[in-house]
Amino acid sequence: MLTAFEKGIAKTPEELSLPSMGLQNSKTRQEIAEMLRVAWPEATMYSLSNGNFLALSHEDESPTTHPRSMVVVDNVFCIFIGTLENVCDLRRHYGLSRQATEAMVVVEAYKVLRDRAPYPPDQVIRDLEGKFAFILFDAKGGNLFTARWIVMAIGTLIISTERALQISNMPSKPGTTMDRDGSVNLQWGMAGDGSLVWSDNPKIITEACGKSCAPFPPGCIFMNGSGLLSFDHPLHKVRAVAREDDDGNISAIVFQVDLLTRLPSIPRTGSAANWADVTVVNEE
Image 1 (cartoon, rainbow, N blue to C red):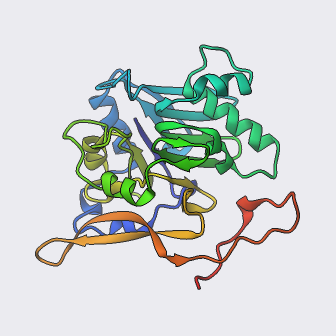
Image 2 (image 1 turned 30 degrees about the vertical axis):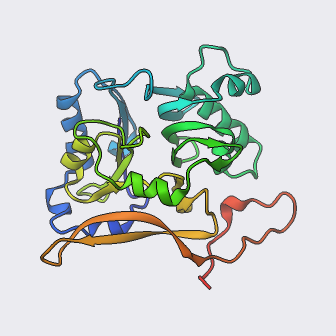
């Protein structure tokens, strides 16, 4: 899986550009798209306006643990990697057929909540259980939504976010799209033109972004309207932590939930308050 979106759609975290020699070895969206065509000639690719794109390849796919699917419904694009343990219940809940893939379920959940505004789009993942990652782009509304999750039940992570982050930041097995715990290895990075790139393939994203890439933290979501948030710890910021090499140069960036910094409670102005439009206030 590989996607790239311009700065006008998704503001790339500036911390991704910190590793030394990062952007000097990265590519533009157009160069990344061409690299993709060479590396994955069989990939399904959707080219959007201004060189933005989503692409999916089934190369090195694990059909039992990490199947990949992509769907487009009413200009809503979704790439889904992994499995939903409660997919049968979700199909029935949304009135979908037994053949509906996980990507179709996510799109339907998103559309239902979007059309029932003022519910924010992050409500999509409240009922999802499994090990998965997905990227959803609503071309009509311009909404970009990314999530990476580890097994959850009744809205709570079975393993702690702290442990999930420790596992996530361990090196992945070379050439695989899985972390050491078997979860989906989603990474994101900054392209040479400032575009935001996502991939589940460490080799591909390194070729695209150089050192300007990092693991996408589990238990977190990214929305182009509010940035990176922890769904498990919504009142705590997700911060970038720099790692230095022996010469004192920044060699890598890791995003972690800062449990020592608590944000004030999110204010509401009635039962129909739209939490999606709330601006984060200053830290205490």
